[in-house]
Image (cartoon, rainbow, N blue to C red):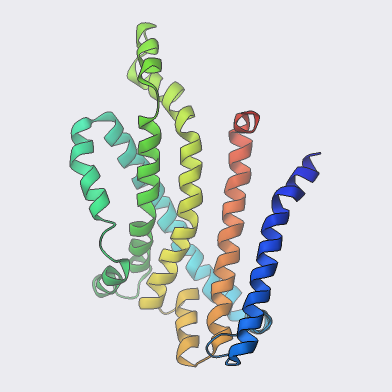
Length: 253
């Protein structure tokens, strides 16, 4: 029964992907210029040909940026959300600044980070954090605010303090929001790392894609992009499995 349910949920996505691949293949054949739009088959062949540098050098470089940036973003996002929930003054001071941080184009800031930090990993990590911390902060903060005040007041009448209410009421209530935020943050962190590498790096999948573009190698440009997409989907899938194990009661609703 469970296996049939999984098959039914993945079948529409598989059909849609197959249709999109057919459209892509037809468009590539119609254009007939691989340096502009390579076919899916050409991209897969090029990915296999470039497997050694991509998997041994550039993928680890990108994943190290993603890992560091995501950890910092989670710590920063959770910290800001908890602080704004605990203090109305902090909310009024920080919320507009958090919103304003997303109004500046990342591609405009990335060269500045490269200027300040050079081609070190930290210029790319900053780009990743700037893109990633926002959905974590806002989603968690909205989750905290969605906790009913009646429940808090009821626990207060039974003698619970703020610490008990936070850990026994707010944390369980906000866990679904946390996992939703992580599922948004994972692809964004990969995008941020790729943008940082594209604009200034000496290794990484974004850097490799830009290098292939200068050589007019369309399939070589798409190969690391395809790899990034697969990695992002794999990580989101892992987060989804972890969410179902930790919040098993959601499936019963």
